[in-house]
Length: 342
Ligand code: F0G
Image (cartoon, rainbow, N blue to C red; front, side, top):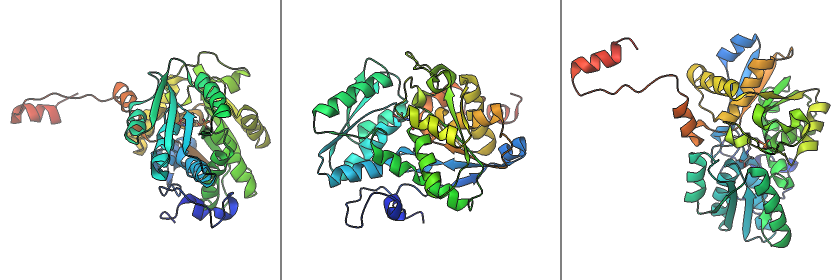
């Protein structure tokens, strides 16, 4: 199935007909990988949904193929988004593919290098805002109300429609046996999408969402004016899908809880060092939540790893457990470097 674009694979469940234009980079159909170390730790079957395997390295591509295809169908010439980085990279890539223009508004100095690199090379106009994501989103909503530019944040329903397909895939791969899904939450579009997807196939796993402690409005019950976290992707203080996310966890008998930056980084390193999976810090919030709060009795568990580790090389290098051993080009020095005690 991996060669089939997402819209083609699930067309009968998406708002597209066979005649509609499809802007695709062959997104979706991502691996659902067994996690032996986590399974052993939890005493349950834990799998990882590797959304970093999407073309631009995050789950955003599922939503973006739909949002940009719909924009092209409507004759749009430009798309725009506010972003902590991944939406920007995805919008830039799909706009490039469609031959339309893209602008992104990002919080100045707060998006990871890999995401900035992607967004720039795809030719998007990058506006670096002296403000945070929430301010960027407010401004971009006002802007698109006044100008003919399509907003491709997850307020756009096509984004949610596309992202719900991840739930279809998990449901198919596990033959309906999934009991609990662990997922990071920022603007809350993705947890909303998963719940919609599961409902559409008649499934009802418990959804456990996790925010970073310094950016946990859904846990606190009020917006956070100055969100802070090492997980820059989810540095969001006022999620646009607030009500939808709360409905998803209430209806599924799950919860939204907080994990600290230290817990996120511990999970991030464990995934890389023990499971062989390098995800970005925000993605590790799902596993951090599983390790912190447990599985609530569930035996079939999936943690969503939303984005690839290479998105954020700075954090990986700043938080590594190993070290770089500098060495001169002589055998005795090499022997000491390779075999000596560290
Ligand atoms: N994980 C990653 C890697 C993300 O980039 C995001 C959101 C989330 C989790 C949270 O998903 O917002 O649907 O609850 N990134 C957005 C962006 C905000 O602009 O790239 P959510």
